Image (cartoon, rainbow, N blue to C red; front, side):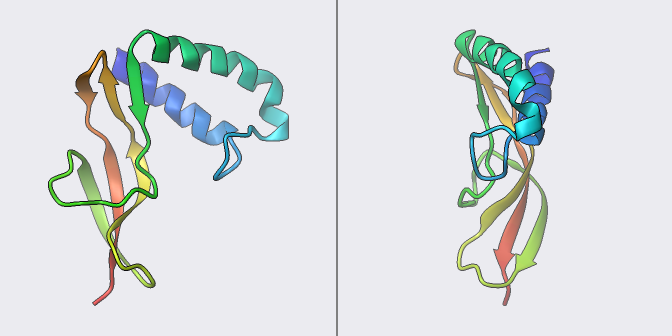
Length: 106
């Protein structure tokens, strides 16, 4: 249940925030305050929800890679998109993240 709730909250958060910021879209400001209190409650209860987007991907990382996409202009493999976040609860892994990784073109 914690993984499902955490994933749902993470997806909601992605839709509410302006890309690349922690600022909600103007039309989301009022509802975002309520969302934030629920987000904070699950974090304080011991959940850690990790988005991997833009992180450097290294072999052996504990992630489910759904696809590798050749991408021009990069020198290292990078997580292009997080489909599901990695979730820990009280230090224990309860959901492995699912990602799409951008790879350099040969």
